[in-house]
Image (cartoon, rainbow, N blue to C red; front, side):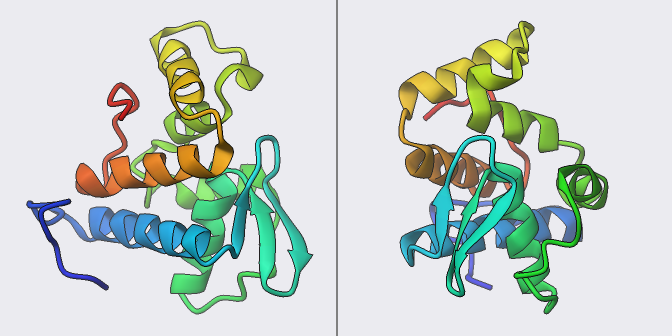
Length: 150
């Protein structure tokens, strides 16, 4: 795992936050290597042996499985199972991450939904939006702050 730099001046407080940061770093690396193709309303879909389409939760789930030495090709079930398994790692933030990535598709009208729509307007391309969501996680030591749209 990389050392902490100016992008993340304070190290995570817990192992859970460290894992969330490691996952976010891996997602960014996979996007840069063109192994993940970010796509709304897609959990995980394999396009070729080296490339898969993922939503935000699918990307986090696939990277977690790869980091733990599990077969990332076997997505281990569905989005609901992934939510349950990721809850302790993501500090219950799966909903916020998904709202920021999916935006209007989920139809939330509360403040979180409004912030999600801001993410979609600010970053209309799915790959850039997913990268920015992961950078938010890294910048905040494993905590996703949906209101920080930058």
